[in-house]
Length: 544
Figure 1 (cartoon, rainbow, N blue to C red):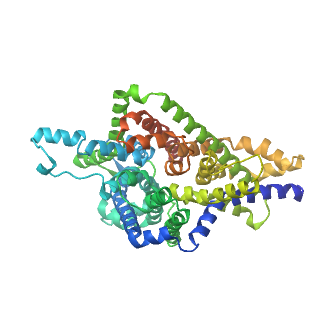
Figure 2: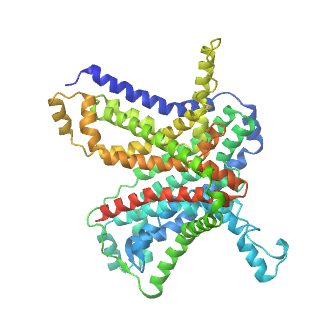
Figure 3: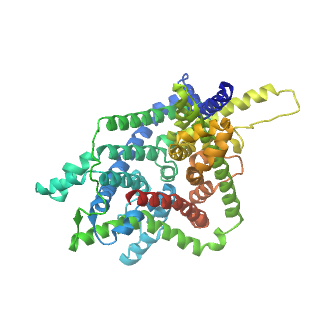
């Protein structure tokens, strides 16, 4: 038996990590409950309800369009055989690698008045001015809904398809014997049984939509996310920004609660005889081709066309885009992402190790509170991180006042704030991946290690970590790529004259010069493809 003193060290480390990673959320809640703020009162009386309305309409629109795209795709690839199905199954996940703001920039370039589509239409039909014809304006709330849904529908597609494949094959065969058509079987059997999975996916899409900043900012659609950004950079009011963030937290709480209630009320036992390689419906003739064409159309607009445009820009503007700025910002992005990955993995291992060796009932609590940052949108997280770091800087400067050392904004004004925010945001990803490997390590190995006289540190270093290599690699990869794509927190927290690839692309696009940052945008997309490869491989192994 290890000494209580040794165990208490791991306990202290775990609780310290939990306290540090949950501190921004605690500060944000505290600040949002403080007294009146003139700026917040002004926003409340003027535009805040418009922001709330736009946010709700945006979420509702994205959810509806995602359902229209993803549910048929999930059903087709789960139950039907049609030409190209083997390739569409994994290719339809590719839009997940596309940051929402990049697809928005590409389509704006294509469909704006000065874009190639309208130029071609004017040339073909002889139109001279906008008064001669009607063309939809992509920089609207409706345009933002389409752009975000094209990127986020794969969440629902993947989860719904998995849920369908886990449903009982006998139930579906019974529906056929009762004379139900495929459409009737879909609405009366498959859809009700998958309701819990669908709600979970929609909750995830809701949170991602609410967190989106760059797309709605670029389209000049005022939502709560842009309100937080504008309030901080326009009024420099942390209190007002915290109060708006508090409203977003309330929305998140409602979404998470509804998702949990839905799961609680959906108790379905359906694992006997799941669907495997046997296809329930073999489509033929026009139905087979319609299924293939539908998959092609979705894949073309959600991934192939934007990537094709980026490749075209990269070739045409290679000399301007392949420059020292690209290498500098790529290096800074890689450096930040690597630091955050290493820190997040190290912290998750400590917390999970304490969770494994601890004997207290509360041993799982540090891990839970440490993961709360993942639910926070980037702009909200940036404000939440600034609150404790600003206080820390103020206290440190007061304490060192009169001495030769003047630290200034040592924490809130340096790269430390970015790294801390990223760790808070993506720690949950690292913990999830490492924990998945940890549960496969037999407790008998711990007892064998202790019987050989190893202390806790030796057991972790010589037994657990070698067995966790797969989970650590996966966690590092996922955190690394999420850091590469993160934009809102980087915009608010980056030090002066410090850019990442995401902020670099955002600045060029804001100046209507996407071509000059096309290689950077393409690099972000290509990096995002890596986790999709591992997700697809994992699903293939699971299905086999």
